[in-house]
Length: 115
Length: 263
Image (cartoon, rainbow over all chains, first blue to last red; front, side, top):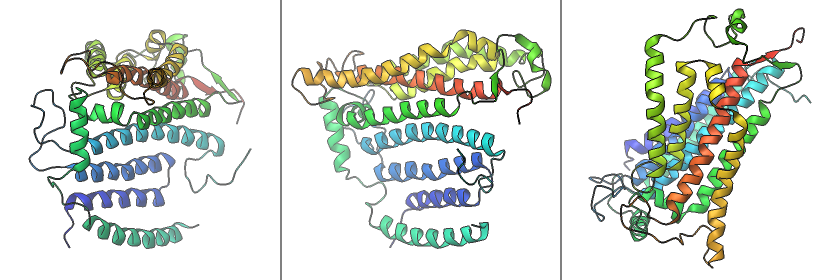
């Protein structure tokens, strides 16, 4: 059994981001940790699509048919990045609201629902 | 739940996940392997549709429907942020046009001492970079089907370029230069344009979002069928979405104040 380091890095990134969320004492910190955890999916997808000795899948300056890395996973990563950025914005807006309502950005103190 | 209990629960979950993940990763194709069945098929399809940037081809041609969903995630999160950051009861907007005398409470105004303008080097760099960044952004959108880039990436570059005005000048300069309501409309137009291009394919009897336009010549600016059109639609939606998003956050920090006497 030999797992390549790139796959292990992806798993480690996810766990370290999740750990950050668990011990987080600030909502902004938690949002950043979520971004770290999410970046594990970029690493995993790009490692799956990597091909030794290949170049980027853009045929503007290389002849079609040259060995290229997998464009499908790159498109998935691209979607992932866009969604990650917009969700981060939404979560930060939620953090601002939580801080305004409860006077604290500490998730331990932001508890209970208030109308 | 105390932090200690949380950590124990996390440790158990993390351990199970780590073991399962390593076992699963062991069955993945080897790193750097030469066989990428989906990749080679996607590359062939991209070349057949005369789209040199095969990532754009995958995003806007082969799986355009997913990108439509992605674009609506963007639009919805912008709408959600606007909703969350709207003026709450007990808050008032400071008059953003009243100039430097508003920044007297240290936290106010533009995040720097009243009357101070950014260092000359920052101003110069900002004003030099502003047109350059906007040009690069426009290039990225227009050439998304030929070279690395596209509507989403170019849109982000364009929106960033405009916000250099805030770094080089101040919030008032940015506020005069861009007013948010037209961008709110443009965002809807961009997202709606994407759907309209997809629906136009239905008129000629093809499937939704299929690439029905003539494909043109390899590497020409007008080629690859609907890909550049969809790139522009996505670019418009992303520029306006980011403008509104950043505008809302800037307004939140720089303009909105609690009313006198409110808790």
